[in-house]
Length: 81
Image (cartoon, rainbow, N blue to C red; front, side):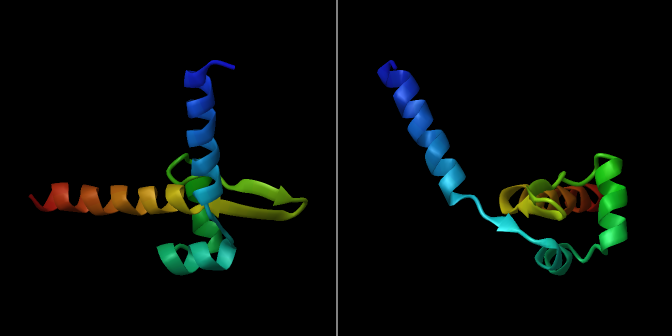
């Protein structure tokens, strides 16, 4: 593997190792969205899709949930301006 690819692989591995998975209750607490509303927003592609952790268990990447929240904050600021 070339040195450039090795560096890219190391960066990707670090990004994954720094990533955190949030479960349903934590996502509900952080966003204020109910389970039903969240799934409706996911189907409409307005909320990040979950990862399958195991059969019957899903979670969300914290970075994606936080990015969604940040987009909502920025949209509000733009409407207020």
